[in-house]
Image (cartoon, rainbow, N blue to C red):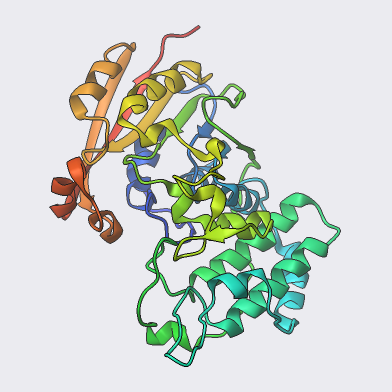
Amino acid sequence: MTTKQTKTETKGVRYLGSKNKIIPTLLKVIGDLPVDDKTMIDVFTGTTRVAQAFKAHGWSVTTSDLAWASEAYSSNFIELSDNSHLQKYIDEMNKLTGATGWLTENYCDVTTESGGLVRVWKPKNGKKADVMRDYIETLDIPRKDKMCLITSLIFSLDKIDNTVGLQQAYLKHWASKRVDTDLKVSLIPSVKGTVGNHVSGNALEIKYDKASVAYLDPPYTPADYSTYYHIWDSITAWDKPKVSLKTNRRVDRVKSGDDRDEKMKSPWYSKKSALKATKQLIDRLPVKYCVFSYSDEGIIKKADMEELCNEYKSVVWHEKEHNRHVMSRIGAGGDDAENAKKKKLSEWIIVIEKEQE
């Protein structure tokens, strides 16, 4: 039976690697696979949009990621099917009076005699967020529930910040719709369906439970995602780290810094290791089918990907063209300079069938 392409509503913060545009294609391609059960591993889950869509369509999904914030999103959307019991805590959060804390000091506008410094949030909202996050930390509730509250806080902050979605740079001038908006947190509902689970860590080290399908969406370029969304990770962990550089990045996310956390480095950021890591991952995943998304702007070239795929039982390629994210056209250099000029990219969806063990 052939699955029709359907549009499924998912939720997420602004994210460079979002697969929202190809979710209908993924639902059809994976839905047509002859699997014994609807179990799936979303290996590089990010904001969990793909996992949300498959959960809504009756799949049991395991998510994983290096990013700490992904645990919060997975708790909210995948590990619970109803989080309405948390509304009372959201109501209390919105009643709190703001006070200066770590977030305000490092990521809010500063007024000076010479004019000031524009950052991520207005001080009034940073102060409220500081107090709200401290409040969540004091609650005697399960970790998953705390992660749901953190997700709601992050989603609300994402709507009123002074960036284009990446936390490596701030806009010079505030957008009128965001500058006057006060922070008010709304509960972000869970996705109805079979409750799944999340595993944090390196995909090449995690011991996954057996499933029918694994969806792989690794980083395409040398861009370090752990630096793009470092504030969301800091809000999730609430470890109030030391920061550096113009944008007050966590010191453990500064590539050349002495405090760099090597655990956050991904082999998919390097041309030398990306192809090897891809094969290692496909081989170690306890699934029959690996569905892999990649694009023509990735550091793994199509010819190399085709050669890798030829090592497996069967391979089916699907290609879809869509507009490139505006931020992927900024600051590219070297081999990526030509790609940066393109407004369109070709997205590949590759279905690999492995030999049954």
